[in-house]
Length: 248
Image 1: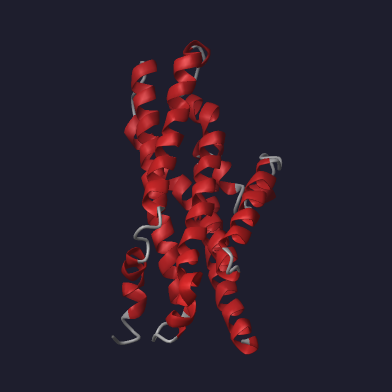
Image 2 (image 1 turned 180 degrees about the vertical axis):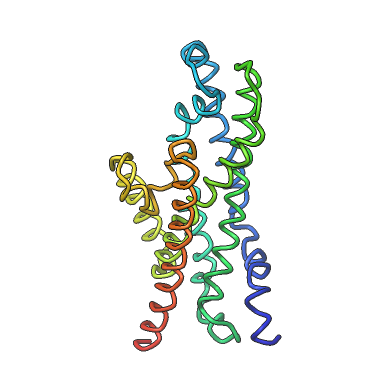
């Protein structure tokens, strides 16, 4: 296999390593758990939400997204740890270095898998929000368009978290170290003031933000900055491996 083909095949090669790891059941179960948040919240306190004025989608997001976003961040943390645990288990990372493949391609392949996997819980949660809106709110105009826009926005905001967690996992041979560090970062970011613009750009804090909190231009800037953060973590991964190669 030529080295030029490896970057394009890397995401497909990474999926073969996820067998019997619990990666897919974790994202499916996490998505179902996140979908239960608005359903249970509306079933218990429906009158307090239906009596509010404004967009039903905004009411549902304001009431439930903080907890749903935290569950999604935990899924990203666990998923990143699993992805690199498959490399360090049984000295797999040493075997990978003997292949015609750059370490950055390995990182990008795992980032692609993690980003695509985030779509599963986000789609399940969006479906739950749509069903809650149809059942408890009479105004359903433009619901599909709002959900698609919100889904795409939240996926982009999760990408810096995925890149940051993968970078952390790539440095830790012991999965429990990266998992513990990720959990600490999740709780630390949840305690920061969400109204600050600087906090909104932090990888573990940006997924708490919602599309309706920004104007159209601000949302585009937010997406661009998040994609820029992903590029920074990719550059940091390459620099880290170059330094590690000098001392190994």
